[in-house]
Image (cartoon, rainbow, N blue to C red):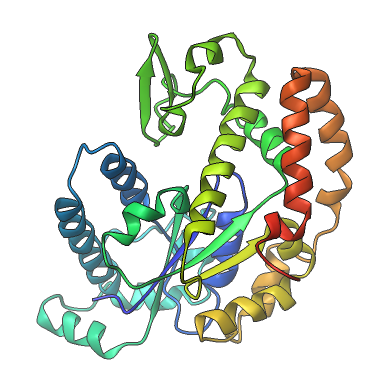
Length: 313
């Protein structure tokens, strides 16, 4: 039922919710949703725990049900401070009006006549792009990157070096190895047992470099990149209007009358975060082994080269 499906993808803490909040202010956009079912099924396909046929059937049904429910505001998020909340959407009255609409075949007809975009925020989707391609979905992907030192610092501050397997609010798949829980994406890490001997920040650094490398490998394998747009957290917050115009053009839509106002609400342009980068790098350097810090420096060098040499600004 969904003609224009958009994934806003990236590593945890890379700026996906900010990007999604801004993009959902464009013309013909529905409110932002999380695409966690894709985050769960694609790794399960990779590990051969579910078949691609079952995953395709399940996920298409999930998408159809999602958009059907959105058209009658069933299961809508009305929390005022969530970026995925209806009150933060450009036109919250739309969803309040839909609460009174009748369900049934008329909803399906309305969906088929519409030309809306559905934006879904996902974690680490691109690292499993080979599995995603087996679903034969027509999608556009906005992939956001962030300086690796920024990511490590943000992960550490969010407790992502110690919460796996302990915190029920970590809604990501985990694996159990050596009587410890780890995020699924370190399943083939050659020295997984040694992760137990690392501190929180070192674990964050390993997790981030592994997933970044896997994501870049998937992107470079793509034969047709027309459905993929690469953006960057710093560039987005410092040049919001210019970058969002580029993204709108990529998606074949445009700013709504609310977009510029929405940019200001998100405190953009913002140049203060970059000013903190050197302090964060110094902090990380003092907390991690030298070889891990050198690996982060190498990753940052590649990142600074036009976002891993993936785009020209």
